[in-house]
Image (cartoon, rainbow, N blue to C red; front, side):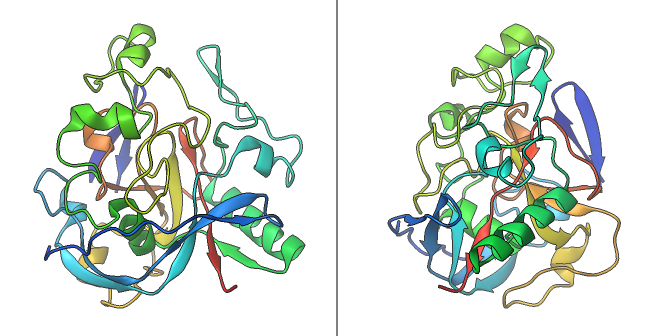
Length: 276
């Protein structure tokens, strides 16, 4: 069981060569009011391929994923409020998290699933949360490093909104990256450089709910093809780290479990679209 810091609070939570990244043009989905990036399926080495992670990120194992399309960014407050107009993402020490273009936060896994179901009913399309395997495949974008840009954590501020020098002015005791992304809390989605697939904010900004039930030993139990863990367990998986996380939390293989009825100030979600 690992301890991952979200701000000043500590939450307890229960490769072969990667294919070269090929970015596809994002496709606007007017019905959903967001853009999706087509991701060509393939096989990759899932898990802690570098050796800087937790036991629940191992063993490294080959996983093969079918084609899918994933949100270019996290779901925003403005998008979510079309579903629940009264939702307020709140603030962190006086800094607003509730701007229309900031990622929606303080939403549970149950809230995220309900939004995907509502959007599917409204549009006639099918939306859902990504599986954990899809999420990591999209986050890596063909990379086998700790982070899709490489193993140097201090390059983070080009690609991700993380606990940085700006945040440290407000939260002096945080462990931060030695760089400055200019945001103390969440940034408007899409503010940072994309990964090799053209997807933004896969690491940092806010944690993202995944479909899977969390199990610390899932990697030794799952099949190779399109795995999703749906066994017994009280938690659901969240991935990617958020604006209040330092280097250990901002890694492609980092996985954490949290109660599906719980939300917090640095946890949101993005969607996968299936079918046309």
